[in-house]
Each structure stands twice: as C-alpha cells, then as structure tokens.
Length: 581
Image 1: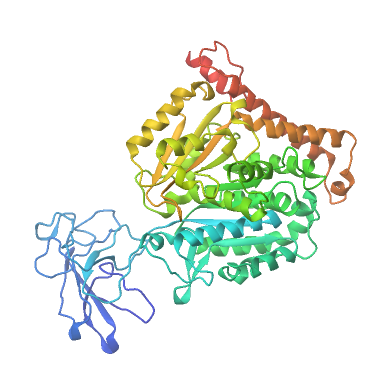
Image 2: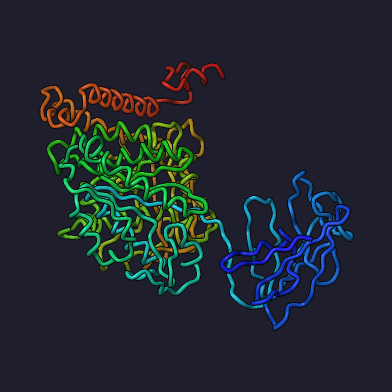
C-alpha cells in the first residue's frame, strides 16, 4: 500500500504515485496504489462536497483512473505497473482522455518520469503548462541601454504590458507566449527577463527614470562607479572584470528560472568602452558557461563619416576580434545608415536617438516574433543561425525593415507582399552602411508579419532570386529563408523584417582596418591600453584576424560553381569540393 498526502504548497503527482481516492482531513487529497502480482488494483470513492474530480479513461472500465507510469525497466504497461508488459483490460497499454469542455491539460509534471497522466476535471483553478523557449536580454553600456530601453517599450506595447507591469491588452495571443521575454511575478505583474549593465551609474539612473523604468527588476540594474572612459581595456580587463562576477550571478539566477532557454541577445556598441570591452567579456563568459545556447548580438558599428570617439578604430577592432569567435549571429547597425533612413525615407528633419533606436527595436522584434506569436511558418534564433551562417565565422548580418514611409503618405501606398518584399530588399533600407550591391548574398531571411498568403510569399521570394540572380551566390541553390507570423506589429496590417548575410559587409571591416592601421603605425593612444595591462601583441592578433575575415568574405564572393580549382580555405572546404569532383 502506497499512500501520499498532498501537503500544503505541493503539487500532487497524478497517477505517478497512484490515483486520488478521496479527501483526507482538512481537505488534503489522498492518493493510493496497490501492487499485487505485477498489476495495479485501483480503488476510488467519489470526492465529497463537490470537490474537483479527475477522470481518465484507459483500458479499465468506469470512472477509474489509469496510471501512466514509466517503469524502471523501460516497459510500459497499461494496467500492469512496472512489471506487466501487456495492457490492463484490453487497453493495450495506452490511455485516452474523454473529450470534455473543461479539459485542462496536465495536472502535474515530474521530469524524472517519461510520462504523466492527463485528465479533465470539473471547474476550479485552470492552468495550462507549456514549455516556453525563453530569451534572456542583456544591454551593456550607454548605447546598449538606450537601444534596450526603447526595445522594451516597443515589445511591451506589442504584448499589452503597461509601464507598471500590468497587462491591459485586447487579445489572448498577447499573453499566450509572453514568457519568451517576461517573467510573471506576484499580482499579475510582468517583469522583463533583462540585465542592464554599465560601468557608471548615470545610464542606470536614466533607465530607472524613463517611462518604462519601473518595469525592470531593481536587482537587475548592475553598474560600477568609475566608468570605462571609452577604453576597451578598462571594460574588458580592469573595471569590467571587477563587475563581471556580479553580472554572471544575476544571469545564472535568471537562467535557472527558465523552462527551456533558447539563447541570449545583447545590445551594445563597438566604439565605446563598456559596450565593446565589457560586452565582449560577457559574451565570452556566457559562451564558456552555456556553449549550446544561441548568442545573438545587436552591435552598433562605427560609421563611415561620423565618429563619436577618437579611439573608435581601436575599440571596434578589438571587439570584432571577440565577436568573430564568440557570437553565433551579429546584427550590424550603424548610426549613419539609421540617420539616412530617418532623413530620406521617414522625412524626419531632426531625428533623435529615440527615432534611431525605434528603428532598431522594430527589427529586433521582427526576428523573434515567431517565438512570441502563432504563425504559419515559424522561425526562431536557432533556425535563423542554421539557415543564415554557411561558415562559422561569417555570421555578420545586415538588417532591414518594411514598411517605412513618411508621416502622412501611408494612405497613398497599397500595403502588399510585393511592395514589402521590394522595400525590404532595397539597399537604402539597410541599417548598416555597406551597400549590398557591392557584394553578393550568401543567404538571407525574410520574416513577414500579418495576414499573408504563403503562396504569394513563395512567388515573391522566387521572383527576387530570379530577377537579381547575380546578387546571390550560385553555389547555394536556395538562398532565402522565409517565415510568416500571423500577428502584425502594433499599428500596421503587415510588415517584413529582412536579414541578409552579404559579402559587402567587408567594406565596414576594411574601413575599420584602414583607420586602425593609420593610428597603430604611430602607436598613437596605445599607452591608455597598455597601461591597463594589455600587450601590443593583442592588437596585432586582432588586426590579423580581421584581415582573415575580409579575405574569407572576398573568397566566397568570387567563388563560382564552374571553378575547376578552388584554393583550400581555413576550413578545408575548397579541398573537399575538389575531391568530390
């Protein structure tokens, strides 16, 4: 005889310890199971006082509960417990639930068992169990925190979350998968799964006092006091190294509260000190601790014409050196391209950082919409990586968003799949100052949102490839990954997010390399870095790594199917093709 009482605060394991036979004193539930000769004999009495009763129909007759238990030997017996391999009463070892209007789902789960019993019950508290694929958001440095705060504004609006964390939405789909980015706290409050990191307190104060500042968990504001002073070495080696353990403790706490962590996303810039130095340190630590999770980076790279800091080439060079090795996918953005979109397309006479960050946030939301809302054709961070990264080091993407139009001109546009596709692929729509027409697409992804016909989308994707075949490498036959999410962004009927892996990104790396070379040849500003414990060798290694990256992009841009001989690259891929021939 095996009895188990459900103590206060514990979840009863239905059909794992037995089945409920009644109510004990004080309303406790009593579960009972008898084992005789390898079979389970089950007894049940009707619950008193109209309490919730579970009903499961298996091979047994009447209103008896069938135990679905994974036995130690791995055998499954319908009514035969651990030893009976057959099925009780002709059930064949399977159990079925009688359809009912009040079907709820799994009453309890124990991950140490292979199976759980499923039933339906009459009324009382209703809950559903889903395994969510959560994303942990990180924002480092002033730039990263400004983009991050705007991102949480946009995504909170999509999910109907108010600045105080309460839900005031108009659709069940808003809450269905809200666990991807939010944790539910007491009183129905939704808290972002985010860590806000900086080496000076000023940025944190700004984030706290912003409209959505009260949304974040106070423990997740992590900052130092002295700042990184635009010095990559301070962020990576000295000041950042002191704060990193605190950040990792908070990160582990958030990860442990996840059901099924999909990965991490980080917003940061490469030109400053904290976002570049400490941001890349954090990525490398995460890669060590969670090697099988997706690491996604939204990086603001130095602009061609506008420079915020003098030592930007040093910081960017050292950051790219780290991103090549540690990130799974890096979405490259730059202020110059974002300003051009605001001025030329959106016709904003005086764009602010808020306008720029809103553009970035729209693209960020588009890449994860399939995780958060239902759709015909799903795409998540891992699917994006698998389809977009042909070789491990070539994971730097350019991003675009459609529709973008000036205020007051929307009513003159017929929003359709062809129009969205055309605008998404336009060079002037890219959020990175690298003209895609100067290179070739290795792969690209188009993520549509709204009520869109899958056939129409397929036709448009096919037409894009056929019309612009010279812009796509021919040795990857199907270059485009497409997905559809049924729920459009707030205020739009449909939208498209474009992500492209184009060899033209080498223009950015060449520009950084040239600027770095001019300064490094004279050892200008180097003492600020060596003073923090760095050696000149690190700069030389970073430069060499960047030149290798540029060479790889150029090699795959020039490669054709007809080539008789291909030079072997660092992965040996060229040699492999020769042998296959």
